[in-house]
Amino acid sequence: MKIQDFDDKGLFESKKKKSKVRHFEGHVDLPGESTEMEGDYGQAENMQDTWGLARQEATLNRKRRKRFLRFGIAITVVVLIVLSVFYILPAILPGFFKGTNIELFVEKKVTLNYDESYRVVNYYCADIMSEPDPASSRITQVLYNEPVVLLNGEENNGYVKVRTTDGIEGYIKSFRLTDKLDSVEPDLHEYKLIVSDTSKNVMTHASNGTLITKVMMNTVLYADIKRDGVYQVALPNGDVGWIGSSGVIELGTRDTTRKVSCRYFVSSVLSESNATYIENGVTLKGMSVNGLVYVCAGVNGVNMPRSMQEQASMGTEVELEYDVVTGDLLLDSIEPGDLVFLRSPYSESDEISEMAVCTDTGVLLMMSKAKTTIRLRSFKATDDIAARIVSVRRIFDE
Image (cartoon, rainbow, N blue to C red; front, side, top):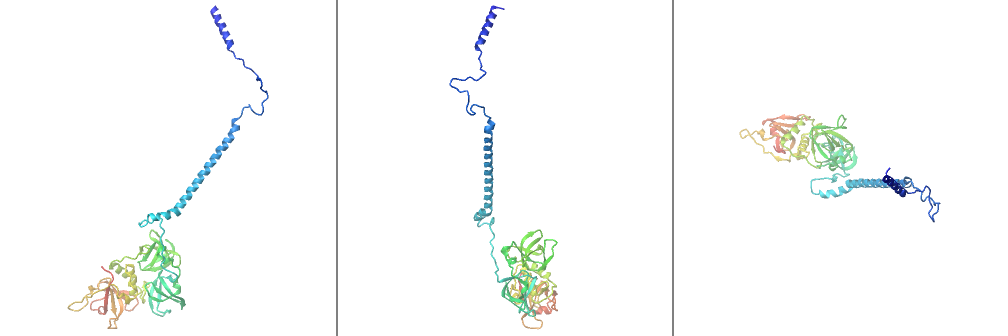
């Protein structure tokens, strides 16, 4: 070994010894320090045990507060929506749409037409008699669901005195009337229906129902529900029924039927041909010519009075034409749809005793000679019928 190596090694060892640090195995008391510690001071802490539970409780409390806050917000939103839909918007929005055709949130205004003095007919038709006696003369008939004014509520032989909406007074069987008026109040319903067929069935159900009643031409009903091919109608007894949409005219609840041309009127008249004749009757089960004109004109847009004498002044007078050579009546001067008024075959006076409706040139729908039916009769210019004509009135245009 070289002297240099030795020196280096010795030097290395010498430096190594100088840099060594001495560690004490036990605790060394410093001057003035006590060897005993008070309490737990100086001992290591379990941070999970000391702080973990408090942190968890704090986190849970925050979550609970957030949950309650969200729930409260949700409840508040729901309450605000309900208030807006049912209270706030209905009160505010009508003002924005006032004067327009938009009826959003606008409550339908209800005006009642009838008070407690009215009654409603609850039978397909009911006779109005001149006296409270079935042997007295029949003034007219009123149709199902027709309102009348009760003039005297005291029964006399089962009859009460009433007045029709067109001013005819007479006596009607009390059990043919009801005091339930909802079925005739227009504003309580959605549709007005006028029966244009000779008759229609009112059923208990829209399909496969049983018959409640038959209603006749010109009967007015009010409906609330419209489905494919049927209406749900209000009935005088407070119930509802169903009626097919064919053979009825749908209108707004306060609208009236539009006047049409005479061919529609003639078509309605012909549908009642061969009806049983009864004095002043207005239905297929018992019809008079003046009753025929009353109901057929009504469904075609012309309001006619019920009596023959009043009908003789309606429309315009038709100037009859006569052959200049023979002096015979020219039949084509009486057009289809014209009302023809006749004197009695046993009198020379111009007092009207009978009427007819012209359905074609030289054809009249009138009472049969036996006074049992309403039927078509052809006549010529030389026949007795032509000689009996007093006047002709035209109520429908071409």
